Length: 328
Image 1 (cartoon, helix red, strand yellow):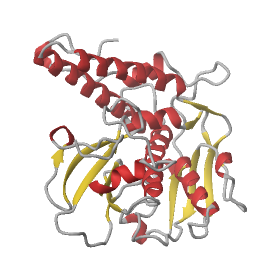
Image 2 (cartoon, helix red, strand yellow):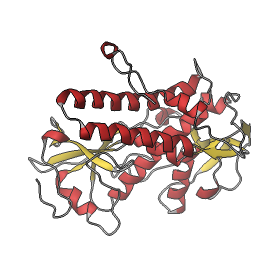
Image 3 (tube, helix red, strand yellow):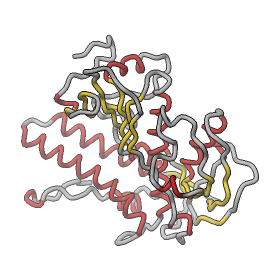
Image 4 (cartoon, helix red, strand yellow):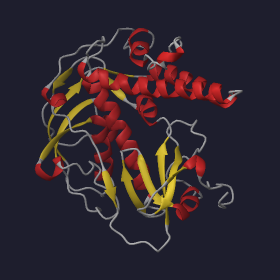
């Protein structure tokens, strides 16, 4: 499937990721198509979207260098890791006892915002949106609830109460869609690496950007169902929540090795440059590292610079050699 417009002057079009889902990689259940335009429940209309722009309250040595890491193909990794509703969401009410994380059904859960005791270590697992300062209860998607239940089970979170829910009786995955998207992504990256001229490299990079734009647009289009077959805001919210939960877990695990400097744009983790090798040398590193950008979900260096100061993009700065810890 072509990614670009044959008219070069028009520039690359966004890759038709949603059409791939609807026509070639449908999330089937026992061979049946999903409910493409399921009724939108109140929980979906009020769903809380996690955001954060957090900086650790701390002072650093003069000249300390920070490093911003972000995830390779973050949303693509989330698409491949979610469980979604196959049919419509049904009102399932509050919970007397919280489920185990593995038993959480896709859908939405209304919770009382739990207390977080480590605001100086890492942002609240629900983020730092102003909404949390004025709302006692919020609707969250299933992946966020799974994260909170894991923290509660580990004794890191205050009491978690589920007051209402809309959940799915049947569920499925985006496995087929994810696999197809990963094939296209690999092809795009291969073209960039094998480009024989600057012009070819530029066109290949434009194809890759159109691919990333395409699957991001697919999630946005699900929210409204405008000009597409799919109107499943719960699917988009589930992917967004899966992505945020995955990034938060990486940052939380990192705090066992070294302090964070900050977290931003949901997919960025800021650390001290001198700490990266230490964290990755642990028997169980907090995350996978792949500066090539190929490994979906692995972290790479995005930029570096003085703490709180101007940054340089990773392709123009020294990178860490994970084998011996030297700066190249």
